Image (cartoon, rainbow, N blue to C red):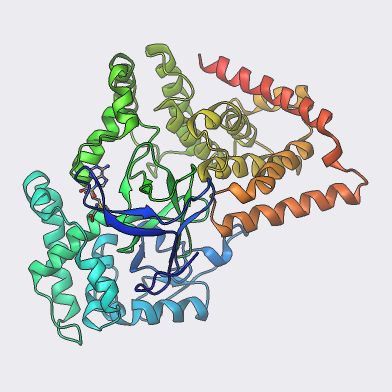
Length: 499
Ligand SMILES: C[S@@+](CC[C@H](N)C(=O)[O-])C[C@H]1O[C@@H](n2cnc3c(N)ncnc32)[C@H](O)[C@@H]1O
């Protein structure tokens, strides 16, 4: 991809321009981009910080990039100055020190053991880097032009404005003012805080789990559509935006700011509250007639929200699993939500995560198979969609664990295990075929390089194991088809059990 002439580290097949229909500025394809193709790659963030709950388990230098996919615990060492941020080693520490930690470390130390929330830490970084002249004039110029909606935040979300003002007060006190970029008063810092809230992305790891927040003023130009044509992903703080559909030259690039599997009413509400616009995308327009179904789904969401959060720390994971399973059954009893609609989709994702924490590996495998076979092809129709790839990877990892004799535990686990054993599943062929699809589709895949590297290495090991045993799974299409018929029966049983 060609570099952007003005912005360091920005490579792109796009150009900025005014977006029609009152969307402000947007990004437009400077050439045709096929599905799976590159839209934008930004090597270094304008700002990126970890969420507070990830400071203890994620490296603040590489954001987990260097040890991603490695099994077992990774030991991170805390910064001896502030004790707040942690690193893999000196390389990661020195990278972060140069970027901004040298500026913020004394403040973190003073506040320890209190830790500033993620948006205040991001704001402090931006303000201190501006004051020390660490951004180029073109980066600052792009940042200055970003939308803030500050007046709307003040009027419509007074609590958000209060949080921004409090952060600005603290940052103004801690940043000390002055420097080559000049001092910034509290009001200016509030403006930066509003910009951060409106324009930041979820920083994710290579498996698309949220780990923090990220902002770059060029990427922030991408507008929203629920019928998006591109997705963003990260390796470390390197951003990759890829096409999930064929994009014609001069077409506008759209990502989704919200979970597009959510019902229209919820998506629109979230977009209104956080981004201050009413979405007029084709997906929102076409679901106007779905009022009846929508209402049922909204009721289902309320039911889900009435259940206490699944991540309460004092609840044993097996209890969470039971709670989620009964919520799934209650949803089926009270609404006609299909397995591919929300909140059933989100509930199953949570169920799989909770089953893993509870050590219910056979049950987690069965639900991951439901997701792979029945849910994702409908919810993410583009085969190279990164979420689909991550779910396929989770299924393969579970199959690897079970093939190595992983023992499940917990209520109901014995039943699922005996169903799997009755079916006589050949895990090896299932693992091989799931990974093979991921590796073969790599050209049109949107997953970030770190993820693809991890999948490729695992496929190589699995293939090597087969070859050592004199087997060529590439020639076993019929046998593999039979294994997927068995998986289909398992999937059918799970869905029937929920109904
Ligand atoms: C992250 S910014 C995107 C860049 C923005 N257009 C600009 O000129 O700075 C988000 C803001 O862009 C506008 N926007 C993005 N997508 C939109 C859409 N589909 N419809 C209307 N406004 C949209 C809204 O004002 C929203 O708060």
